[in-house]
Image (cartoon, rainbow, N blue to C red; front, side, top):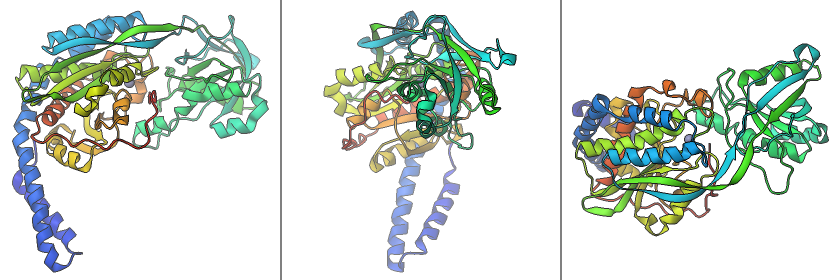
Length: 501
Ligand SMILES: [Zn+2]
């Protein structure tokens, strides 16, 4: 499961000797000795923790429930965008699953959420050049978009790759339909970084196009895969500018449309969607705990989001995270591993198009934020484990490193600086140490927010392994003798509602 001590010691000595070459001789011996003592202390902590991790991983692989839980969520509440009947069903599902997992203090906490429905019509049809009339291109309305007038809008397509390019076109886009066609950068190893570099087109494409008098915005789907599945996601308007319809087009569709435009022909499309905004609805976060033995007021939170886009089942985004949070605690209950501090699973509502659940949790628990030792989120899919990212202080990192080192054989021992997830960003803003579970990211955006986000695209073993490592991580942190030191409150507040997905 972990590195044999003798081999590790040899490696440590080698590292110490190499780094000592540049230091005066008198200091060398002290520094080398201190470094070795620190490394040995960390190694012995890892050795002490390894049997616990091994037991959790074994239990998860032999008798895990995460995949079965995910299957029941996907079957019972496949379309669970906030404010929908599916979301209500998902809340009931989560409450029942937490109770049957043996969690304590299972309860719902209210939040008010936006209620938007995409409607039944999503049609993008080429109407010129004449040879392509009747060709239909796969689209999905973007979340929050207004509808087109009945019968749709017709306009010439203009392709842009950036907002600078759009700005330069200026009045030239008036009365036209703007195709935002900058692909995610496939050369980047981290697909989340590639997503971050392209998603502004989805978020504010319609807003910027509308300001210039365009009729609508068509946005290339956020995936590196070339196929015919459009990927939806959140977009926004502002109070002052005209609201024009916004849709995502499949990558293959975007390439086809752009190819025609670049070919020099005048390309016209007819676009029709019939989405609708309703008044805010009542919904809930779902919470369950394992109470701590000696410091029950101190908390380690683990969270995921219960809502999902309505294109499919939300299996990877974020059904996987929901199943992992409940399963992580169920594993600990079944192994009778109750830590010193309380473990609290929170399934947040409305991450995708409002973050109201995350904000409501923050507001309802304001007085105990200082008691949140750590908040961890899992919202990158249920793929094979790679490790964890965190904004923890250097001392907190030092305390967590021996725990994460026990995940090496599972491929999940990365611990590096980073942030948490969107749902826990309001906690991060108030100084809570946050962390994100990081699985392999190469296939996540193949399915993200599309009709492909279904249970058959989730690997059961990878999902269970992730639940096991999350269980071992939160148990390890909640059971430390010394609580993680708090992070200093950030000087500049993070903007609320800055959902990244
Ligand atoms: Zn998500």
